Length: 461
Image (tube, rainbow, N blue to C red):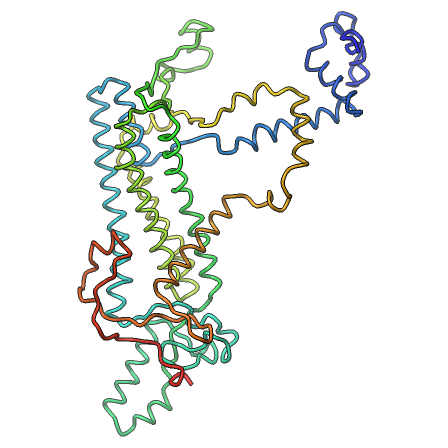
């Protein structure tokens, strides 16, 4: 079909108002392309247009979901950006002082986060043992099916029977203390005291609540890991050479005064901050001072956070704790917002996202290519496989891993399938060793004799 004939049919195909002969000859290339495509595939122009629009969405939005690296407003991201901005500005004194302040605040943030994590380790690995507390594991996890379910034997060696005999650790220890005190004061009435006072058992109120809370906790900390992932991508993909991270750019379509008047902007709006090449020495510095410490803090926050949630017996306490734990990784944002200079806030606000995937190719996709993308998409992988988004799957995998790490490190499985605490011995030091904190697979020094072990099968019966 000739171009003139196609142009003459546009009125009928598009359902528009009649055009003059001159207008028909001015039919755009896009309109001609749509009419030709619709005729080729035996559909109306409206249907073809919708298919092309869907193809554009598939080709551009879905295919380039992770094309941007956006650094957030936190003290670690600021420490990643400021040295390159200072280098681009020839190490101006004011900017350099701001950079050193950022590093000072970053190390302060590290100290705060590591101190909190160390106190978690001190509580779980030292103080709880001196208070006689065993690991919770799955004590009482099957309370609704007791007395015949696998996890119906408590740390005291008796059957839960039902929820009326389940207490928090503090209440359980207090009830045992009262019973043992009466037996020592009145030894002749020890049998009467045991028959009259039931100390109950220490156990878990809800197995499923803590699993849900672990998932929610991992969901909240994954965003911090995404920031580290973006910085790793930038270090990997940007050129290993010194390039300018800031530039003064005035649009050329009018005079600067006219641009200011039309766009209602000022001089500072012409200053552009963008991610560019990084020298090799700076990449090494960022890996050693930012990437590795952030990964260490993230892993330990996830590990101790999951352990803390798994060790929380009460339903309400577990829900409250999951919101409190995310505060550790939010400290770098708080330090940035509280201590940083206004100039640093402006730089991080104006820093342009970096595209580590080439998305310019999507701007020149023809209508027929977009239409074909829809056809090809229907022939893609199995629907159920594509239905699973990778982020929830990643959160689920991380949750499963850290829960497995908790059980592997602190619990044992009985022949009946019950999950109970490993035998515990008192640590030889009353302070958790720093070496054990930074190298978790090192065994902690403890006394030879355990102060608690799970009662044998004979005692349980």
